[in-house]
Length: 498
Image (cartoon, one colour):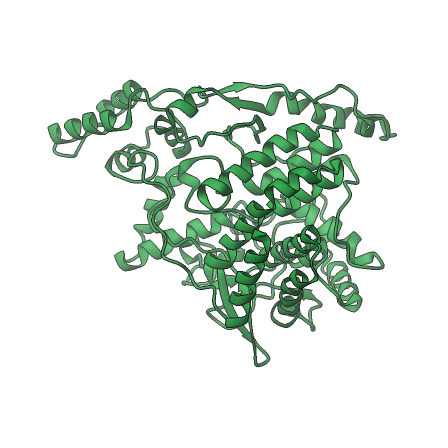
């Protein structure tokens, strides 16, 4: 069974202290959507207020024809194409955003799922009903042309319809989709969840990992790894063990990606542990934020620019794009130029992987696989737990110390059920109480630092409310949980903002 191979490989990595970054070819070769002179000129001309708009526009012609015509235009103007002519070129050779998608009403949507009847407060019931209606507005499916001519789209073809976040986001995203699936299951829509799960599994089978989102320009990075948890929630709801059996090797492949490409060795108390961090080994601006990244990089010496751009991508891989959590270097710790995402060992990432390893152990029903989770739990305790503060903290690799600041991720091990000492849970709950985080009127803040970054104070983000609220509930329980029940309508929908 492939699962044995995965386990032996990962045990070998852990036992030998390996897990170094493998040399990988750039996963997106598009000279239009990922890199190249056309992308550079259009984005730096700022034809659109949002850089994402251009890289989401489908092509009207084959890429080689568009590139040939662009080279002719560039040569005619000695590479300095007037803005008006550049705009005319884009209008001629690209189509409007979203034309490759069509609306879709999920087949398993029904007007009145049971959870609505259980909400006694009429205002809350009405609000939950409005959220339930959103599934019909946010449902999308791809047109056949995305399959027949994939080279003309930045959108990655998906066989099954899906739910999008809405607004400027007309594709699905990785970790956001976990909470979307929680809401869909609450709405009694398991077939929609199964289709979305299949899309993610297809991505792993094609690319070896789940990209940040369903666009080719997201292929260089992933996002917090919750695919195994998605499968667990679906199987717990449906008992569809045949689907699990068919795809357990793919779940193992995704964990392979994290063990091979995102592992780091950390020493504590004379012992070495293999933990994980966010790291994207590619420079260059993010295509969807090209001009912002390029302008920020231009403020640094040329030799430091690619490092900054890679760290920005790693920050985006974390899902916290961006936060003071990742700002470690340089004179201005409120500026993105000080970002050092890969130099931190994040609590939440390692809690997510600890949880996934425990779930894989349950899936395989083989005691040997529980050793992986046990080793990571020991590392969470020895490297990331702080006895004085009574919580888990990110580990700063550059300064060889914990980053003792409040972030909701400090409670991810409680949420993931990756703690063994009930005293630690009690101390973490006291830390939460002493910090008075639960007294903020508009939700648990993402940090206590006001830097202007969207994943900082005073902003509050839906996944992080869940980490703390259900983590607190787990910490108050008699034993660390391995599974989570949906206990309210708040999991129905997850919005993205930028």
